[in-house]
Image 1: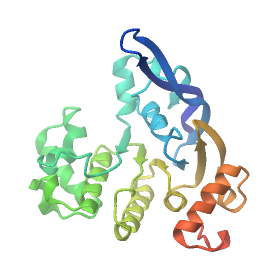
Image 2: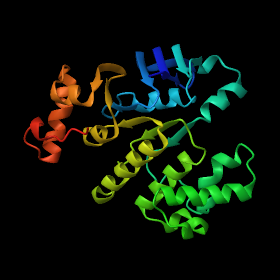
Image 3: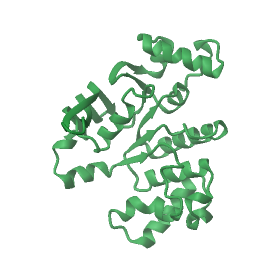
Image 4: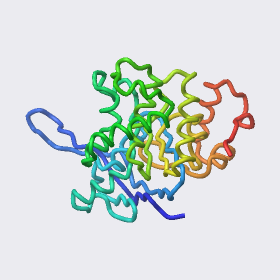
Amino acid sequence: MDSILELQRVTAGYKSIKGFKSLIKRVEIVLRDISFTVEKGERVAIIGESGSGKTTILRVILGLLKPISGKVLIYGKDLYSLPSDQKLQILRRIGYVPQDPYRSLNPVLKIKYIVGEPLEAVGVEWRHIEERASEVLKIVGLPQSIINDTAEELSGGMRQRVLIARAIIAEPEILVLDEPTSALDVSIQAQIINLLNSIYNTFKVTMITVTHDLGVAQYLADRLIILKSGKIVEEGSVDEVLRNPKSEYTKSLITSYLQITGINSLNNIKIRG
């Protein structure tokens, strides 16, 4: 397979100001010397607890946070060394599904405008946008009749499908998912997981999922990357990591997962594929 995304020794953080009078600038390091590669067509899940650096990795990949050091290569090109127009062209090949469908959608905006926004941004004529929006609503399992509804009229599960429709309307080659089921009822989570797997199988996108939930990760990924305090502590196939974890931190995540789900043994975890 061909590499589609590569982080090379990325260190990243956020600038802050300490003290009102002194205005001393400091940088809080969140990611420390992170390196990993995602191959074309692969499904990778980045797993960690709150504060592990998952969101910062997303911001780096999406072109929102320039690393302090290291490189972010997408299609072999150093994202943060590109002119702005070339950087934008690269980023338009990435579809993004943000966390929390309640906070991520303008509640009074019509669905056709929400879903069609990525195409409108590149100058596609509106008559084509509305036609394509109807198509992707069908793909994500929503009735085309909601195209003139507003987001506030929809349930959480329907809003999540709208976010997915917006992410795939421009036929991206990479799909980035930020905690895609965390804000949903348990009864809806399985439906969204099945939908995302269907999209993967249909469009053959490269899928990167950020989550704290091992249960979600094992159904949406082929390979797991375990993150703790801004460092990768373990990575490998789903089967390797869940059946034979090497890091104590990974073992603690698995133990917590077993306790939450009520599963009494790793042998009872259903490994996809």
